[in-house]
Amino acid sequence: MIVTMKAILAAFGAGACLIWTLAVSVATAGGPSIDLVRVPHDGIQPEAVIDTTGTVHLLYFAGEPRAGDLYYVRSTDYGRTFSTPIRVNSQQGSAIATGTIRGGQLAIGRGGRVHVVWNGSDEAKPRGLVIPASGRAEAPFLYARLNTSGTAFEPQRDLARRSYGVDGGGSIAADATGDVFAAWHALPVGGANGEEHRLVWIARSTDDGATFGEETPAWKEPTGACGCCGLRLFAGPSNILYGLYRSATALTHRDIFLLESTDRGRSFRGSRVQKWEIGACPMTSMSMASSSTEIFGAWETAGQVYFGAIDPKGARIPTSIAAPGDAGTRKHPRLAVNANGNVLFVWTEGTAWSRGGSLAWQAFDGTGSAIGPTGASGGIAVWSFAAPIARPDGSFAILY
Image (cartoon, rainbow, N blue to C red; front, side):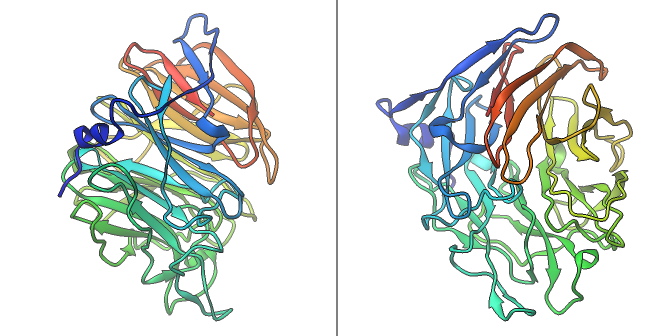
């Protein structure tokens, strides 16, 4: 049975509790209007998706960073109010926020069904595969989907069967035909150890997440994968699947790569987007967003954040646009695109291990030129970042 948005709204009911959020409008002379919106219940690590009906789906983390919980809410007024939270993880304390990279991601599939993946905590069950070096079962890479009545999430499942050593956060994407794609990077069972041998893996479902096949390597190129960095999947139009990840070739070539699949995740081609030589794991994340005509990717390199439009004729991002100002401690870039083709580029400043920071943003027009001033605000919590959304009137909201 396929869940529909109508069923979800009916499940919440006309009398369902709505949570009002604190919103502050910020001055944007010459640019689009922007509201700063606090995540419900002081949640962190927001991930927001707007579906075809205009409903905002929001995922966030709450609780002990090393063993907390993921919650799902929805908004039918673009972030002004939210529904009563539903816990995503079926086992309490089985999600993790520590490190900022390993939290949950969500996607909206056929009929409005909600799909979520996350790195399991040390308390999470079922356990993952046994790590050869230690002989201990590792933390799992978990998946859950909203049930058909829209009232709760089904029991969490571990998706890794042929890979181990999951570290940096994985991702999920879904399309309107019932395909669901989960991705993470890890070592192959029976293969060599080390970051340079890590692979990006894809597990695919063709039945709205009811079952997943075994994961397969997304790409045969020996790029490795940055162990503690995230990655991002995005299901674009015409059933094209995109991915962004960071390599670890020879341990120091930690470049951003773009992957593209035109056969529903069965095979990929790819290209290097931007180089970065660094002999360390920088714990970076990526994001993707689309307008009616373009798909954009965003990433971090050497303390600066960038975004660019994907070439529809090839797996590449030909032009990189940097956030205004000098590089420093900029991380966790996020994107939203409004109906006018304006891009709101959002990132954090000053965040680090066990340290919060500030929020920054800049709007750009369809040519990639900045419009309005660069904005800034404090209040990014430890292990957190922001999630921008576009409203139908051309304004934006930033959830943080």
